[in-house]
Amino acid sequence: PELTRMVGFCTYALVSLLIIQNVGSQKSPSPPYLAPWYLLDISDDTPNKAEICKEEASTHNPSATKIILPQRGPTGICIDFPPPFGWRYDIMIRGPCANTCCEGIPPAVQDKFSGVKYPEWYVPGTNAIFKAPFYFRGDLSDGDEKEACVIKDDGTSVLVKGKITNFNPNTNCGLMKPDELQKEEPC
Image (cartoon, rainbow, N blue to C red; front, top):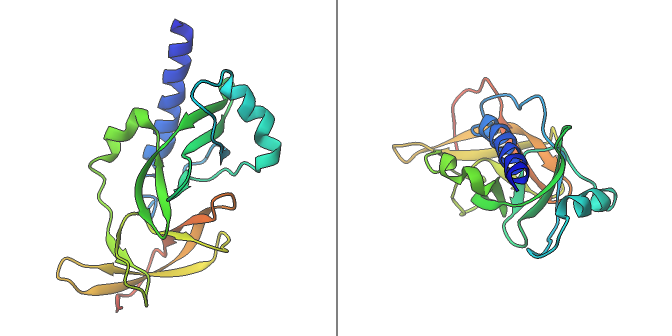
C-alpha cells in the first residue's frame, strides 16, 4: 500500500509539473516532453486500470499534447509517462472552456489552477465570450492560423493572431499560440 501511494504521488507530481509548465502556454514555449494520452472511460471498481490503458492504446491513437478535454463526456484519461512509470489512468477535472474544449486538470493539483488568470476573448464574428485559454475545436492541424479578439480592461477589443499547437485528433481540440510580434489592431 505504501509503494502504491508513493507511485500515485509521483504520477501526480509529474503530471503537475507538465501542466504547471504549460499554464500560460499562450506566451511560453511548450515543455520538451508531453506524455501521450487518450480519453477512456473506465469504471471506478475496475482493477488494473493501467494494464487496460496499455492494452487499449493501439486502438485509441494516443497523442502527445497538452491535456485538452471536450466540454461534454467522460474525463477519464490514459496517459503514458516515461519509464519507470508507464501507463496510468486518471479522471481529470474540467477547467476553463472555450469553443467546447476545456483545460484538463489533475485532481491532485486543482488548487494550483485556482488563481490562474485568462484573458476574456471571443472569435471574430461570434457572440460567445470566453475566459479561458485560446482553445479551438474542429477540423484543425498544428500550424493552422486562427484569430481571437481579446477584450481589454477599457472594454475595447484587439485582434490577436496565432497558430494552433497541441492539436489532438481524438478530441478535435487545439490551443492557439499567439504570434510573438503583433501590431495592435482593433477587432
